[in-house]
Structure formats: structure tokens, C-alpha cells
Amino acid sequence: MKGNILIGQSGGPTSVINASLAGAVEGVLEAGARGKIFGMQFGIEGFLEDRLIDLGALSSDERKLLALTPSSALGSCRYKLKDDDLPVILERLKKQDIRYLFLAGGNDTMDTIHRIEAFARKEGYELYGVGIPKTVDNDLFGTDHTPGYGSAARYTALSLLQSGQLARDMQRVDRFVIHQTVGREAGWLAASSIMAKQGEGDAPHLIYLPERPLSREQVLKDVQECIKAYGFCSIVCGEGIIWRDGTPVSASAAKDGFSNIEFGAMGGTSAAISLHQLIHEETGYRGEFQITESLSMCADDRASATDRSEAFSCGLEAARLAASGGSGSMICMERLAGDYAVRYGTVPLSEVAVRAKPMPDYYINESGNGVTDAFLDYLRPLVGDMPKYQRLW
Image (tube, rainbow, N blue to C red; front, side, top):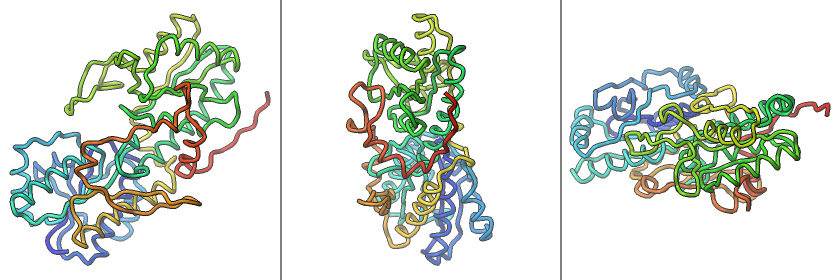
């Protein structure tokens, strides 16, 4: 590998994104790189400010610890790249003699590296750009699943397992509880809560996903049936669920820099609060809501061992691909038949940048308020074994 190397992280963090960073550094060293290994502080936004960290100075022990560190060690950003930024970025790449560029992130990040790599090629500058997949939403196109999802799914499932015990025991006080997960347009994370369910009456009872528009009548009917059957109702919803007329259940109208609707705190409201208000006003029942937002993105104590290992391997494979002359691609994972195993491959950045991966129909039940056994088969190896608790009644 000739020239210097630049690695960045952007978008929301995960519990294992630094494992990908450590894997990329390890892969670069493994390839015998002679140049410097830089990290972008605060992603591409920080690079535009010449904020660089010397990753090559890390010792072997420090790299191992980095792989176990949650959140985004380099610092992240949510900066929408402008056309006017591209010449500036190219000049900074030339100034630092950077010939290899790696970015770990989701769709918007893949769009960023795709545009930079394509612009450099058009201008005749030799640059190898490779994307490293990352998102707790699991909605990246072209890969069976994304690093970060397994750990966030485990966080969600454990939260529902434990809060479900509370909801069951406190049903004479609170008849319903709503747990909201992140997930703007895809319900993968909300759906992962199903791993908490170990018996028919266990939480969660209802899972509402952005892929299935709701009606108020359906929600009220579902809740009443659950309370009649189990004494209480546990609901999980993705933050981006919508009504059948297309409006967000959260009623949020605020938008971020990428023109996406803001959910949670920045939207000034939430789907969980709206559902809570609807159910309470129509039934008179007392209930609770739980909104975790970014906690599932940085919970190292609940990280999936499989997820951490695969995140490291994605970073390693990205470095190997670039060292062999590969560019313009994102590393992906393909699930193999039989006992759980994956094979690493590539998907063009141009495809990932413009497409998302919602949950397929065969993973969602016919009523649109839960998931199928096929989804459980998909999910189990990513999350790992769940604890069991004693029941007295």
C-alpha cells in the first residue's frame, strides 16, 4: 500500500463500530502499509477542518482495547456532503498524500465515500475508497445484516425481557406499556424484541413496524384483546411507524440536514407518547412508555460476541480489499446455508447509497403486529442466548 491511509466514522455509533476501526487498522498493518494511518476526528466534517488523529501510533494492546470500546472513538458527524466540498476534500487528500479512504457508516456515509471516490477518479487522482457497513437499523442494502445490529438487537431483547417481567408483575397498576426503538423506515430493531418472548403471555404482545401502516381502530382492538387474554399489554414500536394516511404516528414535522423527519427528542414528540395518549384517552387505562433512543448504540455490556467478531472482520476485509486494488465498494456479509456462518463479499457503493432494506413480508405476520418464525430463525444467531427467569404464577 503506497501513500497514506484515512479512516472515518459517521452517523450514529454502535457498540461494535470501533471493532471495525481496529480491524481496518490491523488489516492495513497486515498489508505492510508504509504510509501513515490517519483517523478523521468527527468524520468528514472534521476532515474539512484538518482534524486528524494518528492511528498508527496505537500499540497492539491499545488496538485490542479499541476493539472493545463502545460508541465512536474517532468522533462522529451527520454532515451532508455538498458538491462544493468535493474540490476542498480532494485538495486535502493530495496535501496529506492519502491514497486509501475507509468510512464506516450507513446509507448516507456510503453516499459520501462514493461521491469522494468518484470525484477523485474523475479528476485523475488515484484513490481507493471502501465502505465498512454499520448501523443498528440493519437497513443497509446488499448485506445479510450489518455490524451493530446484533448488539442493538440484544440490547432491545434484554430490555423487553426484563421490563416485560415488570409489566407483568405490575399489571394491576399499569395495564399497558409501550417501548420505542430507533428505526426510521425499517422495523428490524423493533422486531428484535421478539427474542424476549419465552411463553405465550410474555412480552412483547404487539410489535408495530414502519413497514406496516396502522389504524387507530386496529391499535385499540389489539390492546383490548391482549389485556383480556394476559391481564396487560406490552407494545414495541419503531420510531418511524405511520398511520394509514402516511402521517407519522409521532406527529413530528421537524427535519434533519438530510431532509429526514426527526423522531424522538429532536422531533419534539414520539410515536410512543402518541400511542400512549391514544390508548389512555380511549380506554382510561394507566400505562407507561419507554424511549431508549441512543442507548442501544453504545451498550458494551450487552454487545453480541458474534456482532463484535463480524465487525472486526468487516474492517479487516475492507483493508484487504483496498490493498489488493479494490475500490468503490462496501464490504457485505452473505449468510451460508446450514449452521450459522457468513462469507464476506462486496457490493457497489453506488447501489448502497441510494437503496435501503426494509423487513421483507415473510418476516412480518399477517396481522401486521408481530413477526414470523422465519424472522426468529434469522435473528437468533445474531443475538445469542437469552437468560431465563423463574415464574411463580
